[in-house]
Structure formats: C-alpha cells, structure tokens
Length: 253
Image: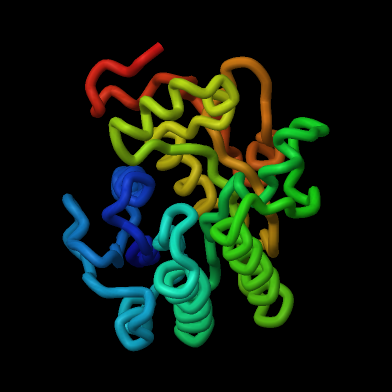
C-alpha cells in the first residue's frame, strides 16, 4: 500500500496551522510544517522564512498539497511586513509548488477582502461577489486569490481559496471578538478550521478553482455563504461562538 501524500502547511505553528496539522495527522496524512518557529507536536517541522526562496523550495519537495497559511496576519507596515511576507512570500510558495509538481493549493484568504459588502449587503456574501478590501492587508489577499487563479488556469493546478472567518489568536482577540455583535457571526473555531482544511485536502481531484468561505455556525445570521464549501468540499461547521475558545480560560458571553 502506497504512503499517504505529503501535505505542506505553511504557518504551521500558528493557531489555525496547529489546528490543521492536528486534524490532518489524525486522518492519517503525512504533514510537513513550515514556519519561522518550530511547530509543536509535528515531527517534520521546517523552520524558515517566506522571503527565503531556497528554504521554501526545500519545504515543497515531494509535496502533493500545499496549505498556505503563513503571512503577516493583519494590517501592518506595507514595505517591511506586507510586501515581503504577503506578496513576495506568495510568489515564492506558489511558484515553488508549481515547479515541484504539487497538484493542489489551498490558500488562506480573508473575509476582509469583502469588508464593505459585509456592511452594505446583500448577505450572505458569495465567493464570486467583487472584492471590496478593507486595507492593504486585504488587497494583498486579493493578489493571493488572483495568483491562485493564474496557477489553476495557466498551469492546471487545483486551487481552493478560502476567505477565513475570525479565529482568535490570543485572549485579547477573544475579548475583542466578544465585544462585537457582528463578529460572532464570522467566528471560526479551531476545530472547525482544522476540519475545513482536511475537507479541502480531500476535495475531488477535478476541483479546478473555487473561492469559498469558512466560519463556524453564525449566532444571528450568516454573513458569508457557507453552502458552497458544503457542496464542493463536504465541509459543515459544527461549532458556534464561544465553542472552541476554552484554552484562553472561561470565554466571555
């Protein structure tokens, strides 16, 4: 029996990265991590930076699927943070994956790409609705999605771009999310995040290019279209705010 394919997770030491690697390992996948720090509980863990082209090329060797999570995670200085990590880093990862013969790219975009439609409507927002980016971070995610489409159309790769909901990275994030009514409707629990990426890895091989959303179950109303991820990938969220934030101590209500 042949070995399971290798799945590379960039940003594997982050909150969503750890959830994705844990779920994939539980399903029997061979997982390789790539991050600027070692990834806990992952044997094949590579340390490097997205700006280091040679390090990225080593990371993608022998990989079937790339889950690209690594990035500066929100608005920051464009020249010193967003440009090298969220633009040049995307080029290094996608081009290295193409040259290495990877067959699937799963790209972590953001709901910030459609920020102003969230306020103006109509809801829920669809994957093919036009971008209305919040700031330069979101603009970089528009670039990521366009780069993914190019890889699909020009190079025949299977590409899934996912506009992620809000998965808190700290206790402070939990408190910020709890204070905003709308945020509970775009909350993404670590458990649902891990299950989403596993479903994306297991999506049919004929999947060419799709933009989908991933959140947990909304508290009031769905901001984003979750039906497409269900139909294409078989992903159905199980959690609802505040499930999944127990690690940060008792969550606010």
